[in-house]
Length: 287
Length: 230
Image (cartoon, rainbow over all chains, first blue to last red; front, side):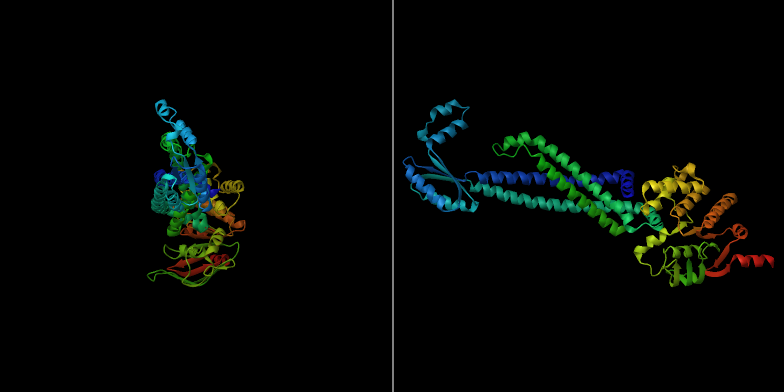
């Protein structure tokens, strides 16, 4: 109880140092929050593309249904294919109509005859796409093969680069935060040197003196992380109409409140740890 | 209770703060420690509270030899000794009550019981009406009594009072001494360092005199009486 009382007193009595510590922690955790959102969003986008039919083979008009079935079976036998879907000329027309329902002029001009039948194929692994694509290209009934390997691999390399940049930024900012907390707590310790000396003379143990400073560091971390979480969540919610428009069709929004709470909890734990660690280093150095 | 055996304390440049000191203080005894400035009175207190370690000899406090006392036991030793510091060492940003509560908080006493005990001790030293005042709002004598209350609050076995009457007028000085005698009569061992020879002469207690770090006189009550008769 007395630790908490002393901690609150320490915080109240030096408001500028308190603000500086909280601001630096907020900055660090703003970066952490945005990085988490970006990473979660990009992995959702990657998995969306991965789950989509990744190779589409369009058939020649003269392709017979039994040849298409043979090809379909041949693909399934490779064991690399997770899903194969046949889209007939009629299905293709229905999809076309749905996509262009607001443009009657485009609908009038198109009939099922001019749209090719196709096979949409998903694989378990991205690296199997090339082999499947080659098999399809070598078939005499296939006129064209398109696949999304490039989209997925570009996204994957972006995500991986983002992860590295984010990790580096978090590491640097965490180190800056720790040093800031060490400095601020160090100043506070030297400010209260006489009081600490008196407390020791009347029987205070080292940890009795140290705990309020460590709690203070943890408080700065937790308040900084909470502020950063509020700011980043508000920014994300504010930007979601634009983002959901931009990422049309990719099911990211609305963001689950459970996900946001998990982010908050993770950040609070991480921040309290960072703040506590900074303060611990300061008390080891100065007390 | 306290025993100094061939104790010497030398500081960095070879200055002898204490030189081969031998004396012991029994339980419930009241001792005046006298001597000019720099004679080693405060060093003796600092050895008893293990702020310093002796360069030579041994200092025994109760069952502990302070040279061999592990670092983690020092707080326990200090809680058994109440100290009225020469410069009082009152925390300026805490109220009278908070200052007196501090040793109880350090000793992890229950807050309600601690508050009750602190108020009781403040009552004993006549400061009941000043509990919520800050040190800057008190007179010298009142501050001195806050320091005594803080030293007393954990009911220590020993109280070390370093010049508790310094800078006080004679009436207030006597008030403080009477308070310390009263505490001693309740069973607490007291060592009081002082310059005030008027008090030492008129209070019938043992006197240990120091000069330049040497013990020059150790006069018990009976010796004083014999001296008076002769």
